[in-house]
Length: 127
Image (cartoon, rainbow, N blue to C red; front, side, top):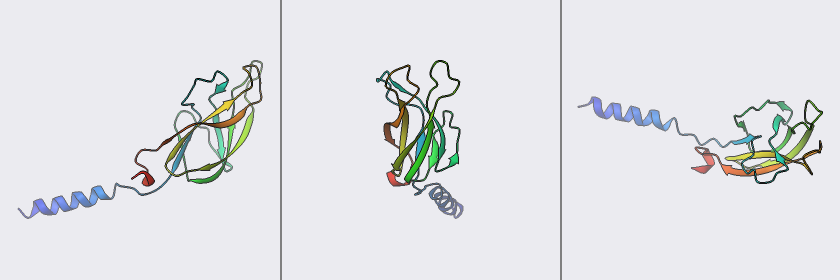
């Protein structure tokens, strides 16, 4: 009988170690809302001069003011899209979906912007 309470206490202590209060945020270049025909997915190149090549998985970053460099889609006749900077005050426990907004489908120039935000599940500030 003595082993059961000891095992229960050990398991409870082990599981409490899994809970995190760490606050973080995430960025993705995949748009959430796709209703505007002149918005496009982007590739996240860097955050605060730290290089990334984001391909499908959100990038985990610390909250606070950030300089994000993204690459837009290439226009016909170009191999790569242009790069633009976006300054963003990233809030804790938030997933940011970024996009490129163009004046028209043939434009190479674009404006980087936030397409949608949503809470990050399991993040410390959401508990």
